[in-house]
Image (cartoon, rainbow, N blue to C red; front, top):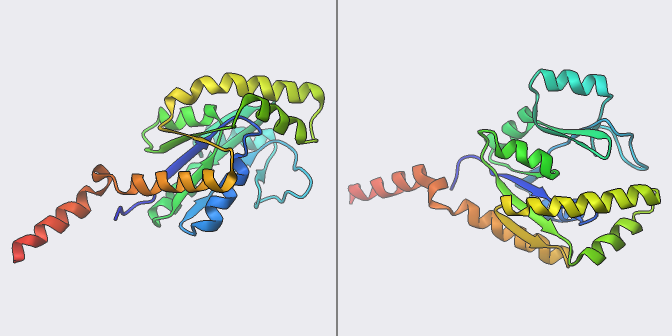
Length: 206
């Protein structure tokens, strides 16, 4: 019914499974898309420029930032990340729902802007399970893993600023729950005022 796609912001601590849940959501809903974020970090094994991320150096990143090209940006674990505002707006105007997998810093920037969004926080089943997942990444040093876990613990205090919370104890179940949230948001009266006005006015013809 709504004439413009939703902006869904999904946040959660490192290791909670945001990326996997996002992939499942987009595979099951072709009207739900993800933008390609920019980052200054080095590509990991198997990652492709322009597909997984737009990999840029810090000089280029700051140039784009000064030009106002970002919907949000953040520095996470020593690297910069950002979302291109134009890409998000173009997709929404085509009635695609845009799913942003971003940290709490980026979510706060969007929340403080004029852009309307649906905010969802993804939680692990427990902190013990989160620690196990972080250790299982295998790509970080013990110091880096400890830093990730400490950051995750502090990020939990941001959950009160979100609209919804979903526990990722099962990937398929978490994805279905988020899909339900998206459907519910699309049915909000306030998001369908023009449709409802036109619908009711047609009753005058009978």
